[in-house]
Image (cartoon, rainbow, N blue to C red):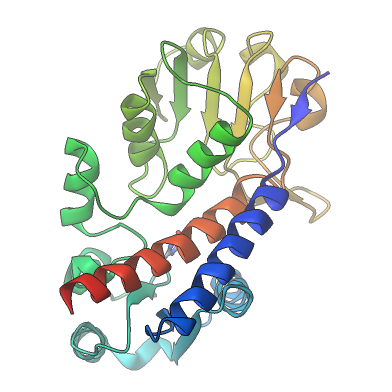
Length: 285
Ligand code: GUN
């Protein structure tokens, strides 16, 4: 039977460390890290994510500065708000919750965020830094997954790593981070032919598809590490990942649960990135 990769426990540990660092900063007369969180529109899932991020901030001694905007706020006004936050020395990180409502150009909005405040690491400058291995913000979900692998002593070096999904938020940066950790990486996607033949060779299998029950036991190598990034609702409305957990867990060496695996790690890294943004601001002055 496999070992559960307990993201909830590791995220709590990381958040506690951040909270202690926030206190040390305060004692040293440094600014409390501050994160602007912008939510545009009424998407219910986004509203839940944003609420959770605000809770995390509170736990970590980070000031959260919420902006809840109506869907008709408008792109130009949103860009002006980002300009103001970019120029505000009391704000260290800026997060625009995605997806934006129809009519907004997401790329244009993300590219307006100062790369030094881009705690999601979505700006092309930070994507470029990740690609060439320079220091900078790391994208929250992939960095959270690598932190979880590290915690359990799982080293991707020389391993066959298969990432299912090629999104800018998860699949592509996950592949780059595993490559940085010396994994042999394959990125599979909706046009991949004979996916099971690839995944059956995976020592580390990361699924970021968004379909409940997508990864079935016949796709899994015995002893594989399975990372489930999916956040789906099954037919009964229960939160579940991409992986048929009950079928695949007996085959795996390690597996993430949903909930309690990748999700809490994503949020913990966001807090870490916000602290890093405050440290960057200290350096720049
Ligand atoms: N929507 C889904 N995941 C994310 C994320 O990590 N950051 C932002 N800003 N929006 C998201």
